[in-house]
Length: 214
Image (cartoon, rainbow, N blue to C red; front, top):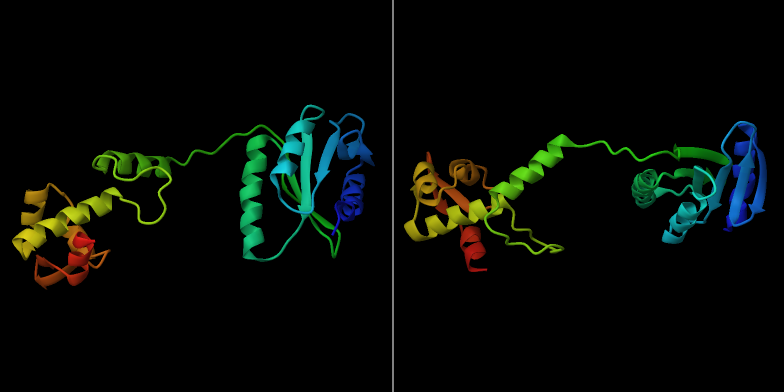
């Protein structure tokens, strides 16, 4: 596959929109011009790359209507890459096109324009809550593997109490550890650390003992 394979369908797509289209104008792979409209610049690549985005950013000095174009791939991996790169293109004010080479179909996934992120209030509140509940700063930024969340810290506090005191009621664990949701944590048993010995009373499981000694 070559970048030039993308040119005929891109050219036809823009001509259908009323543009006069020419390839290799200055540093641009494709330039399209129409009276009364901003010139359209399209940068072609055989796949997503940092170089493609660098070229698109550079072309914004020429026109506000800059698109990046790549062949349309298949499978879950390409779908995820496409979604991630659409987000990046939007953030940079670039448009993004894909081309189905077997049919010549050009798909517009986003148009150039100012970046206006949509705030996710629920996610923001969840992160602020986690920040407030976490004790100290137990996880270094960039840590791979098990993350020491506030929930895990609370579960460990419950496990340590049971290890020292034996089977206890949830209310007793709450009073001793300060973990408000102690009963819920032991009942839900997300980590498999607890075992219910009778109504409202919990003990430490073998998995819980291993977690404390690990």
